[in-house]
Image (cartoon, rainbow, N blue to C red; front, side, top):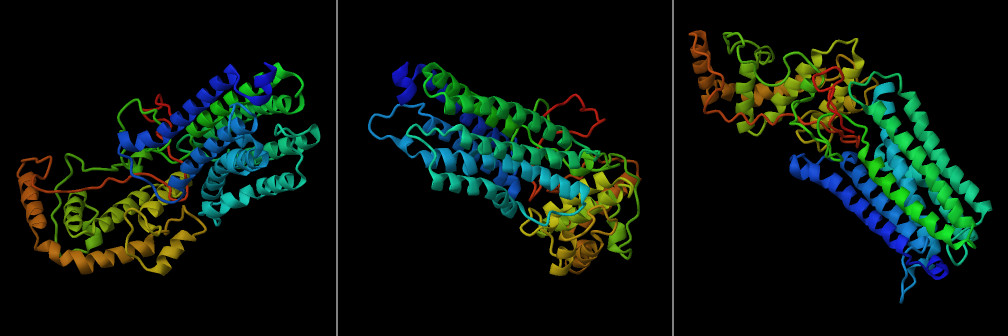
Amino acid sequence: MASCAVEGGCPSDYIAVAIAILSIVLLIARSILPCVLHKIPRTKGSGFWIPVIQVFASFNLLLSIVMSDNLLKFKKIRWTHFCYIWGAWVEGPLGFGLLLSCRIAQAFQLYNIFVKRHLPAIRSHIFLPLMLLPWIAVAAFIHAKKPLNDRCHMGTYWIIPVVCLHIFYLAALVGFTRAIQHIEFRFDELKDLWHGIIVSALSIGVWVSAYILNEIHEEIYWLQVASRFLLLIVSSILVVVFFSISSSQPLLSQISLRRREPLEFKTMGKALGIPDSGLLLQREPVVAIDPNEPLEKLLLNKKFRQSFMAFAASCLAGETVHFFEEVHELAKIPIDDPVRRIYMARHIIDKYVAAGAAMEVNISHKTRQEILTTADLAHADLFNNALNEVIQLMKMNLAKDYWSSMYFMKFKEEASMRSSGCEVEQMSGWNYSPRLSFVHAADDPFHHDHFPKGSSHDSYHSD
């Protein structure tokens, strides 16, 4: 016992390492399999990178504990001699600090979007390094003062400020969460944040106790073995549970496999309960289409809009009609319902307005910046200028050719059949290519499968 307690390689050490490896495998599976199994498109910005960073930070945290606490016995090369690399840098700024900073970044995004009603002034790729500065400063100070002994342990004098740093970051997460607790979220963002805080607090409490026992009581060998075993096991559980609890916008998830039933809501409009949102109604009234009418008025008719959308898609310009459709859906949400308007506006920005968006529309730089820097995401006229520009583009580039296209001929034929009492549920021969909207947040890493509260899926539970 004394030998393996000092040099590593006790049976319990290998059991803990095996569990840590299993947790990393599970973590990677949770981040990749939803994209593979459910064909979830890869998001851009922090919606993709923050989950990746969380996996990276989790791996660093577990690896640093294995190396700095001598869980493995190395015969030739003693990598654990690099105490300050593993114990100060990898375990701190690149491990637990980075992991908790990602969670704080999520709460920071929600606070700005739903409380301040504007996009965060500080993007995640800047916010995360700023959050890590205290960890980097503490790691540099420890490296300079060199308080670690040959077993990578430090005394009580140094443990206190390190523990205080952990508590400070947890307190910051609690602060952001309390600041948004009055928001009536349509999904379960707030509940997930509190779940994350509770799990983090419990894990940190157990982890700190094991850490202190491991650092201080070096002379008690069985306590050394037991405390480092508990330290690694609790950390393994922490990274899996912490990663699995997502706080995000709805519908699709890159960090959850809890999909017990088919996804019903394929558009943000449906998820938010917007009336008549989504695909065509089976028995929509037949309306005579006059080419002399303004295009924006004609597009209010769903069947005409689908026909025009199919034509636009054949001209590689389908995003313009999709943008018109989703802004039209936004207009159906009452002004006195700012939360749902913010959800929808954020979705439109991520999908159509942000630079490099999946279906980026061709609008002027001035108009794009007006939207991205708006002081109120719930404003009724947020997309008016962009919509006017998009309609002008459709009039110039699409409308004239549409009236002489087979798409319009098919539309008139189907309209004539419906008016004669022959309902046609699907316009055969068309390739609509509707490219139904998916929900993601380009600068908001939060993605999960929740449905609106009060819907038929209240029993469905995911992160």
